[in-house]
Each structure stands twice: as C-alpha cells, then as structure tokens.
Amino acid sequence: MKKLALLFSAAILFLAACNTPNTKIKEHISDADSVAINYFKGDGTMDSVTTVKIIRDKKTIVQLAELIGKESSGTINKCGYDGSLHFFKQNIVVQNIDFRMNDVNCMQFSFLQEGKITATILTPEAKQLLESVRK
Image (cartoon, rainbow, N blue to C red; front, side, top):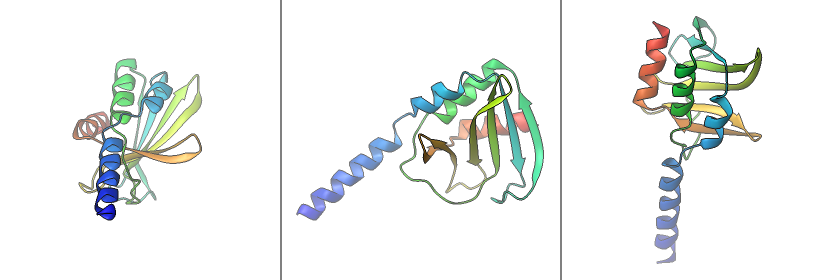
C-alpha cells in the first residue's frame, strides 16, 4: 500500500511539473533585442547548420519567449537537436537554447538555467513559429 501511495504521489508531482510554466526563462529572454536561429539538418545531429535566420521583430521575440516558457518538462530527453536559438541584448548573448522539433516523441527546448540543464515542451504552436521563420 505504501508503494502505491508513493507511486501516486510521484505521478502527481511529475504531472504538476509538466504543466508548470517556466516564467524565469520567459522573463530572461523576452527582453532580448534579437534572436539568431540556427537550423540543423533536422535528423537530430548538430554537425551542420543548413539555415541561419535573424529575428529583430520585438513581437516575434516575445512570442518565442512565451512559447519557450509555456510548459516545463518533467524530464530532459537526450534525443538530439534540430536547431539552436541565441538571444541577444545589445550584441551580447543572454541565453542559448537548443531545440528538437522533428521527433514527435521528443519535442523540447533545452537550456542552462541557474547552472542546471532544464527543458520545456516545444508545442505544436512553437514548431509552427520556428518553421514559418525558417521560410
């Protein structure tokens, strides 16, 4: 019975963590004045950048920040990367974020926050925005 109660408690904590926004990252990057997006081959490997896009539109930067901070992930999956985001303020990088969007089982943003690797869920809306910027 104790094991069942412990398992149930762990499941609740996991689900609560997954639905919690990461407001710290959102606040940290929404102040950026530009974002450089590197798109990789799209197969999870980081060995080649195929496209680079620069965003200076404040509305798009804020939208991207909202989507990155929208939903924390309970786990950090090591399933490769499809690209990276580099947020700048006055020509200084304030945050680097990697993303995986081409694997339905592993759609996430991952980044260093307070000295620890953290992940948030890359939603279908975030994927759509990243794809539209790429075109």
